[in-house]
Structure formats: C-alpha cells, structure tokens
Amino acid sequence: MIDPQLLRDNPDAIRRSQEARGASVTLVDDAIATDASRRMAIGEYENLRAEQNAFGKTVASATKDEKAALVAKAQELSARVKVAQQLAAEAELAFTTIVGAIANPIIEGVPSGGEENFVTLREVGTKASFDFEPRDHVEIGEILGAIDITRGTKVSGSRFYFLRGIGARLEIALMNLALDTALAENFVPLITPTLVRPEIMAGTGFLGEHSDEIYYLPADDLYLTGTSEVALAGYHSDEILDMSKAPVRYAGWSTCYRREAGAAGKDNRGILRVHQFNKLEMFSYVLPEDAEAEHDRLVSYQESMMQACELAYRVIDVAAGDLGSSAARKYDIEAWVPTQGTYRELTSTSNCTTYQARRLDIRYRTESGKTSPVATLNGTLATTRWIVAILETHQRADGSVTVPEALRPYLGGLAVLEPQQ
RNA sequence: GGAGACGUCGCAUAGUUCGGCCUAGUGCACCACCCUGCUAAGGUGGAGAGGGGUUUAAACUCCUCCGUGGGUUCAAAUCCCACCGUCUCCGCCA
Image 1: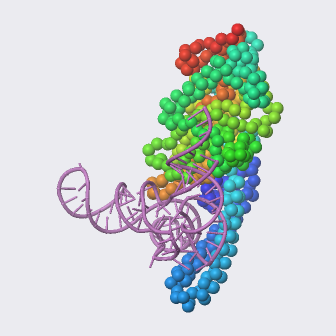
Image 2: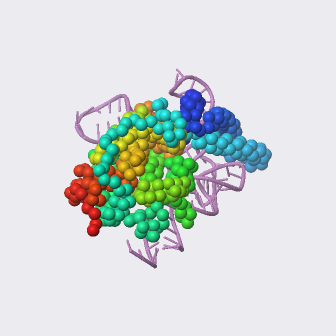
C-alpha cells in the first residue's frame, strides 16, 4: 500500500515509478479520482450520521405521545443513512482496490526495465578454474553420498531430494554459520510457523503476483509459506513498535515451500530449484529514514557470508520491472557456478520501505507522539541452494571437496569431504 | 473431536439482567504542572486507535472502533447468526 498522502502531493513520482516498472501509469490517475470521490462519499455519510445521532437523542427523551411521529421521521432518516453508508463503503473499496494495485515507488537510482536490465554493482572473488573437467553438484553429491535425488523423487516426486550424511551436516553447518553471523549483529533468532492464515499471506503481498507459487491446504484454509518473511512480517502486524532504542531485527529459520508452477523445464537438474528447502532470513523493522542504510547493512552481512564460504559472486541492483510490488529496491547476490558458467542467485534483499508495513499496520511513535508506518527489509543469509555453489567451487579432481575454513568448526573440524567408496 | 465459560480504548475491571441517561465509568501504570521534602505520598490537568472537514501548522470539529464479520432496530458494548481466539473438563494421539 502506497502512502495516500504521496498520491495527493506528488503523483508524478508515482507515475515515474510505474513507468520504470513497466506497470500501468493511468492507475495513478484512477487512484486520484477514486480518492476524491471516496472522500466526498465519506463526508456525505458522516454528516447524515451526525444528524441521525442527534435525532436519536430526541427520540429517546420524547414522551410516549410524541414518539410515534418522531420514530416515523427517524425511519426515513435511517434509510438515507443506509444508502449513504453503502455508497461510502463502495467508494472506499474502489479506492483501496486501485491504490492497492499500485506498486511501491522505486528508490531513485533503481535501473528501469525488465529482468535483463539489472546493473552489476561489483564482482568479488576469483572464479574457480580447474585443471580437470569439473563435475556438477549432482555428480559430486552422489560421489559424497550427500544428495540423493533418485530417492527424493521416488518418495515425493520431481524437485524433491534427500540430503544425507555429509550433505545433511553441511546444510546444518551452513545454517549455523549464518545464525552466528546474525547473532553477532543482534538479530533475534526466530523459528517461525510455515503454515499461515490467508490474511497474513495477503498482507505480505504474496497472494497477488505469486499466488500460483504457493501451496494451499483447503481443508484447513492455510497456506504453506515460501519464505519465513511472511511470518516475520506478520509477527508484528497490527502493532505499534518501540523504535526509540534500536531497530528491531529477526533471523528467521524455516523450511520454505514453493510450487515452482511457472518454472516447468527450468533448472530441472539437481537442487537449484526445488519445492522444499531451508533458509535463514534476516528481517528488519527500522525507521523510514534509516531504511537505505539498513539495506546496505543487510547486503554487507550477506557478502561476509559469501566470503566465509569462499565463493566468487557479484552484487546486482535488480531492475524496476523485476521487483516485487512491495520492494522499492532489491539487491541480489549471485554466486559463480562453475559448471553452468554463469552467476546464480543465492541471496535477495529487498527494501520494502513503508509499503508492507502500511498494509500490515505496523507503526512506531514519532517524536510528536503520532503513529507512522515503519520500514521493513528482508534478506537471505543462507539457503540450501548455497550447497550447489560450495560443492562445485571447492571440488577437487578425485571428487573430494575442500571445506571453506569458516565452515570447518561447524563440521567438527572436517577439512575435506571425502568420496564414499 | 465433545461439553461449558469467556473476549470492553497499555494492564485490571464496571456496564450486557430489561437496547436509548455510555459522549464507554473506575483503579493502576503513564505525561505535565503544583505542593511537600527525601526516594514516597497528595493535588490539578492531560492522555487510545483509524478516518473525514478546516488549517502553513497547531487548535477546533465530525464520523467510526467494546475479538472479527454479518443481521435485527428509529437506535446495539447490550439482542440474533457465523467465524477467530483464550480458559476449564472429557476423549483421542504422541
């Protein structure tokens, strides 16, 4: 939900944003029109209602003889109030529907255009090179006895897998490294529900553009979350937060579920794109003026994780047309995947400014004592997918894999993952 | 899953019997000032959320909110229905 005040004061800013996203610009003018008619309808209803309230007192204090005539008049007034109320409700709905369809105004500097129009901010690390033919993560996973895709498919269908042995341990190690990184920055760890109610799913904006990506359990009217962001954002919904001391930060640990309905045929091999994975997600509630600085901070934590895992990566500024409706800016970090000869997304971090908080009604108290929406940000600190880049980057000719130094303490000091038989 | 009780503006509660004297009262906590004088008490005043109008802003003013959504009525915290949640007991299951 955009700021209605911005719509009145500076609609051009919203128009420019919509244009950069390749979204509807006329929606802005529709919103302005419905805002005006909504306010008029509300005014009419409220005036009538005030009249009815006043008249009601007359009726209440009237004598028995007078009452019949007064009630007759009150009935007529009541009918008019009902009509006005109905019109006001319709005008309100029309307004929220149209305004709700407008995406978060992008931040100055976000590149225009679609998926391919991202801007690379920096490339860090040396891409792995080998004096042998490198194996992909599926093959390495088999050699190490770490990833069992055949049985995953047998048990649950395509895009499912088992992590076993050192694979299972590696994921837990990775998640723990991420958790410790977050703890060092005072994030509060949170293990979140992965089934949520419809209103929370809608409030975080996932039921709109991503609705066919989401698992739904009709018997219980619950949705399986594709990221703990949903629960982390819903955690403080309808609350007024105390932001006077410090930003409110959570590290959410959860399994994530995605239908991958629109991805038929894409990334079919391996565990790059799967229906179920684990993720440690950072989520920050901050003052609106601190949002951009927090965004940079979240990226820096992600980069230190990348460096800890000794991966080559680039940071990209995602183009406007490729942003979700809640994000005003999004940075992705993509790691180099040797056998694919390309960078693949490992993290994503969005600055949702006040857009998400406004929809979920998450506020703080300003100096003057008024309430105002907070800014929310979220970003990945580790996921199962990282295993793909780690295995491929650190593989050796004999099929073994060197463990990045930072991960060794989490694997009982293990320095090399050895082939099984 | 079955039976019952309950949900009031931070917390605790009054109000629901019998719809209109509720513009939702009171206590605690909170804020400002005053008094006192020593770590606490007294006095006065203020103070919830959302949305209109007016305004540079403040002030002012109006509407809405008693778990949520409907309904009945001239009028709903109060009556009816559905849903959500909490508690107690029973059953079932780890």
